[in-house]
Length: 396
Image 1 (cartoon, rainbow, N blue to C red):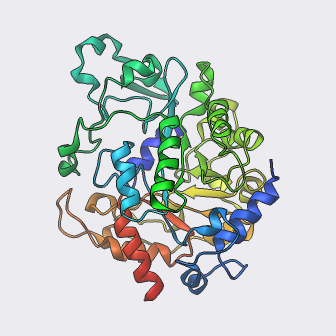
Image 2 (image 1 turned 135 degrees about the vertical axis):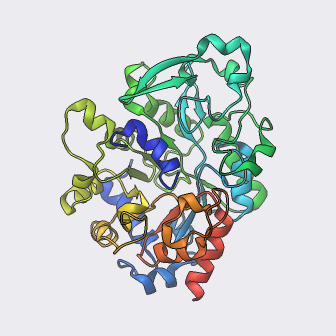
C-alpha cells in the first residue's frame, strides 16, 4: 500500500499545555528507562517491569505491551469485550479506539469507516441502500460507511470477526457486542481503573483525518473536546494519541497535552495528508535523522511497522535491523511498532510452523527478536503472549 488510505488496513494485514520538549522529556526519559539514557538490550531488560515514580508513562513497564484493538486475537476487534480481555490478559495499554465519526458527529471505535467487514450491517435489509462506493484516501472502497449512519442507527448493529479465515474461533462471539463510542470507552476506562485499583491506559487513533475534515467531520477537535470534558487532556493523562497523518498529530499538539505518536507505514508510502498537500516526502524521508528530529518537535513517539525495525527479504525472512531504534532514541522519541500476531501468516517466515492460516508459529521467538532491538513496546493482538514473552526476555 502506498498511501495512508490503506495504511490503516496495513496495520491490520501487513502483520495482516506543555511544550514538545516537555512531552519528550516525559516519554523519552521516562519510558526509555530508569537509567536516564538511551537503552540498549541490557538497559531495556533492566527497565522492564520496573515501576518508576512520577506517574504518567513512568508507571508502565517496558517493553510496553499494547493490546492491539483490545485482545483481537481472541475477540472481535474494537469491542468492549476485546478491550476488557486485553486488560485481563495483562496489557499495559489498550488500543481502545480507532476513531471514526458518525453522520451526526459522534466518534465511534471501528478500524475503518467502512464497516461491512466488522459488523453485521449486511444482514440489515433496512440499510441495504446505504451500500456505496467511495474513494477513501485514493482507494476505491465499496461498502457501508460510518459517516452515512447516525449513532442511533450504528447502535443497532453488532460487531463480527474481521478475519474469520485466520480466526474462526472468534466467530463464536459474532453479534455479542455493539459498536462502542469513544465517550463510552473513556467511561469504561474510569470504571476499570476503579475496579482494578490501578490506572488503565488507552491508545486511540485518528483514522483518515484529512478525508473526514473534507466532509466537515474534523476528528481532532472532537477528540480534544471529549478528552477535556473527562479531564484527560494533560501531559500525564492515561491517553496516548496516534495517527498515520503527521498533520493530525500537529493539530492535536495544539489542542491537548497528551503524549502523541506518529504512525509510519511502509518506507515507500506517503501519508495521505502529504499526498493532498503535494508534499513529495515518503515515510523513508520521515525516518531519516532530520525527519525524526522534525517529528520530535511535535510528537513524543513513532509507531513504525515492524519491517522498518527489521526488514524482511524476498522470502519473508528477517534480515539485519535498521538504525531506526537508535536514531529515534537519539532525538528522544519512543518506538511502539506494530503488529505482533501469533498466527503463521502474520509472522516472519523464520518463525512459522506448518502452513495452516490459523495455526500458531513460534511467536515467542519473534517477540524476543524484536525486543532485542531496543524497541520501547509493541502492539500485539495477543497480549498474554506479549506479557509472557517480555518476562522471558527480561529474565533470559
